[in-house]
Each structure stands twice: as structure tokens, then as C-alpha cells.
Length: 470
Image (cartoon, rainbow, N blue to C red):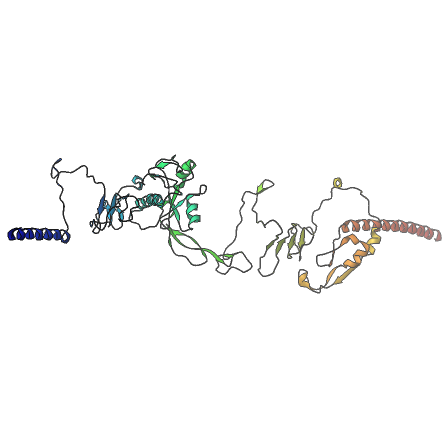
């Protein structure tokens, strides 16, 4: 080769190296020109086998597609058709997120999220399938709440309870149901079926109840950012131990109900330690709740069955104002009515003008009826006494001189009149005393009548003797 040829070849080679280096120093722009329908028209289609978009992805030597599934030598997945390094905007020129959909006036019901065809069970399928099902949940909530920030968790429906209960129980009470998601038609089964989309989206419990019978394999989209099914999240603040209430639209605050150590106070922040419910500053009303007795609706304050009495206190403290035992016996002023259906610890008052209480006495209810004999003799064996109570406060605060009988004395004559209370003290129950007194009076009258008759005879004899003496 001549010297001239050698110089020409060297210059050519240096030029090639220079141009090659420029290719790395400056990004290349490619202009595609078409002549259909016109160089400046709107083109109906643009097709590519796969596209990578982004500042780094243009470096084909660094970011290459896998040549086969599972290729360990390249870093763009073999199945990927489109990879984007930055944010993608649909309907917006300023995307703020990896995928930012500008909804505008489009309603949430016009949106669908599609997954690739996967022949697997949705509950046990690969991560890619579950990811695609999550996309359905995101798109539903995003379209329904445009511009809002939120989090989504996808959980499998438990097959029986409400969507809201699933979110509450499988995650926690702060998560709420947004949608139920199934295949591309209601009756598509997830088991052993090649489905192509998760496009069946239900956003209310009523509709879900109508279609849940088609199969238990539903995904439930749950969010902690919104109330149930896209409702506005409740805002507001409350105070510890107060039961919250709605103080306005979607706002909460304190109610009048306060809980402390398991005791509940209404109108008070300090419920009494012995009271599970302490109401201050108002009356408590009980209204009929369906219980009917003798054809009349009644209000019931019921103690739990199985060994619990019922105690009402009007004065607090240890005062036993009204007590009903487990056997149904009533104590007024005492918590120990014993075997009496009504035990009054203190004086009782009635306004009908009669000292007596009505009781059964019909002849048709009785047998072995006999007249009391020797009534006057028996009465004469009783002893009426005056006395004072040692502890008047235990006996209706009756102070000063009292009149009655001594139980031990009465027991010798009428043992059935004497009983013992729950503390071992003897008590009088003078059943039939009125009948005894009546027969005693009758016996006394009989004797008096006989004496009067005899006296009349004696007076007649005296008069006859006086007449003879004259």
C-alpha cells in the first residue's frame, strides 16, 4: 500500500470513530414520516411490539428485554410490553403519580381495570394475578374519589358475612368496604377457569347480596381513607372514655355517656363505683317493649335469671328501699323479706279508711268448718303489755311507749301464731285473732245474758216479798 493510500485510510477510520463517539455524546432523534392520509393528518394507528420509555430506558445496552422467560442476563421482563420510567398521565398533562387518571366528569362506573389471562384460582394464584386484582380495587376507589389520597388492601371474601364485616374483622375496625370484585361476568367461576379480567365490580351491599350466590370467590377492596362504599370519612375529635356521637354531617364529638372502669355514667364523669349505670340530672323512663300481662302492655325492669335479686335505692348508700328476692318476695326497707311475699320494715299506710287488708274467705274455698270454742278462756290466757323498743330505728323509728303482746307468751297459747324471722327472732302472725275475739265476745254475751235473766228473776222475787210484807 502506498503512503498516500495509507494516509487516506487513516483519515477515513478516524472519521468513523469520531462519528461513532458523537452517537454516545448526543441523543438521537428519529422522525417518522408517513404519507397516509397526509404528512400533517391524524393517524389512526401506531403499532410496536414493545416500548420502553424513560431517560434510563433509552440505553438499550443497559436496559435490554429478556430473550426468553427467566432470562438472568437482561433486566426488562420478557412478558413486559410497555415499561415507563416516570409518571404516566391519562387525561392530565401533569401526572403526580405513577399512574394519574384525570377523571373529569367521567363517573366511576365507566372505569375498568383489566388483568392478563391467567388460568388459576384467584385466591391462590401467583403474585402477578393478585396484583392485577388490586388494580381493580384502586381504579374503582380512585375514580369514585378523584384527587384523594388513599390506601387499598384486597382481601378474599369469607363466604358468609357482609363486605364491611370482612374488612373490619380481617384487618381492623378502621378499614371499610369499597367494592367487591369478581370475573368479567357474574357467573364466571375462579376455580379451573381461564378468565381474562376482573371487570365485575359491585359497590354496595344490597347488590352484592343479590349476586353473592354465584360463588364465594370474591375479592373485597378495603380502605382506611373512606367510610363504607366511598362515603366521606368521619372527622372530629373526642375525649377519652366518652361515647362519641355525630355532632354534624360526618363529624363526631362527645356524647353525655361516659365509661369509667366498666361503669357507665350518663350526665356524670364519675359513676358510682357500685353502679354499672349511674344517671345524673334527669329521670329514667321505662316504656313497654312488647310484654303483655292480662292484655295490658307493661314496662319491665328485669333482673338476670339465675340467682339475682332486684334492689331499688332512693337514697343511695346502704338504704334498702325496695328489694325483690330471687323467690319473688318483696322487702320494703329490708333486703331480707324471708318467706313473706311482702315484708315492710316500718309502718305502712293506706288511705281507704280501713285498717284491714282483703283476703280470701269464701265458704266455697274452705272445709271442716267448726265454731271456735272456749274462745274467752283462750283470750284470757293472753297478756297485753306496754313496752319500748331497744332499737327503734330497726322498727320504723317507733319511739316511746308501745302496746302489743310478747311472742313467747302467745306461743304457749297459740303456737301457730308465732314464727321466726331470718335472724332467729320470734314474730307474731295473729291469723284468726278477729274470729277468736268475735267468739269470745259472743261467749261473754251469752254469760251476760244468763246473768241478766237470773238477775231479772231475783228482782221479781224481791218485789213479791216486798208486797207481802206490806
